[in-house]
Image (cartoon, rainbow, N blue to C red; front, side, top):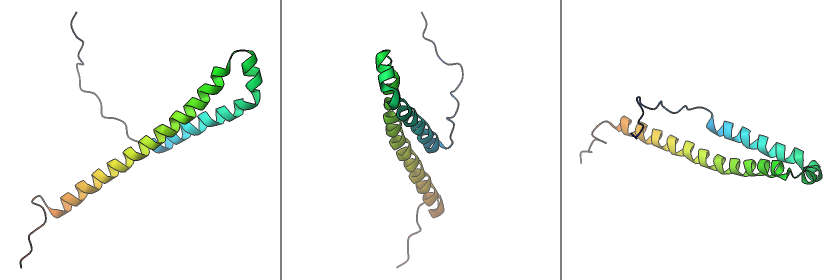
Length: 99
């Protein structure tokens, strides 16, 4: 059986408000967790506690994701600033000073 290979290049990743998207999703997971807490007994009686803990896990994983995407955004900004600084100084670097 032959190995499958893509016939075209992968598209560029979509960029957008990544931090805001992850923050919104995290807040939704935590809100769902808090809304379900008063019904904990109802979920326990029906062996459906996984609904409650899935929302809690989604919120915690969202916090990890938020930490990750904020670091990614900062790294992208540092890289863009370094490229801009290099372009400003010219292709050969800073000019030597006469002394």
